[in-house]
Length: 194
Image (cartoon, rainbow, N blue to C red; front, top):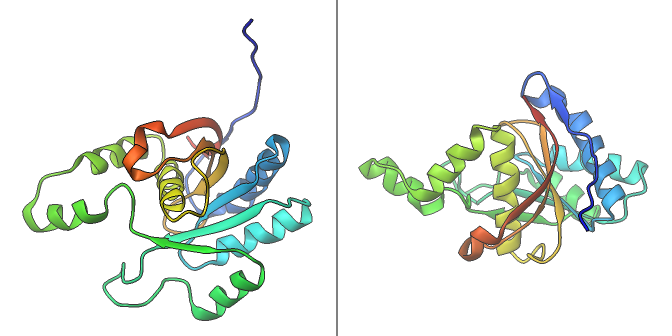
């Protein structure tokens, strides 16, 4: 017997950080509805993860929040993009930080920049960008978090991504490790810019 469920997708008229508050609210609401135990959030400075924490606390969400960011030295120096004082705040709120190489570019990006051409992971990333940049980011951070052992590849999570600042896309998905990427399942689109 087949059954079906109707759920709402929220479409933003434009991508960008002005959608952050609504994206975070929708993500927490869906995590509560589905009783999911983890929300992943892409963050450059840590500020979006802190905002998510406030919304989650106000909504009585008791699952984990995991901040996922660029690997050390991503911007050509040895520093983290999340300042030490913000890292301390995240630690105090029990929000782990996953710093990892981008799952959909990583090493292949360095070869493309030196020799040209394009790799399969970059083709996948570009395909996801046709939906939205945040869609690509949400998928990518789920792989990064699974590879870091921050989430299980056997449990659904909410993953939140966006442009270079803020958030505008949230998905429910089943993460996968890089070496089992084809097991990744996108279960629901919560919101994204159309």
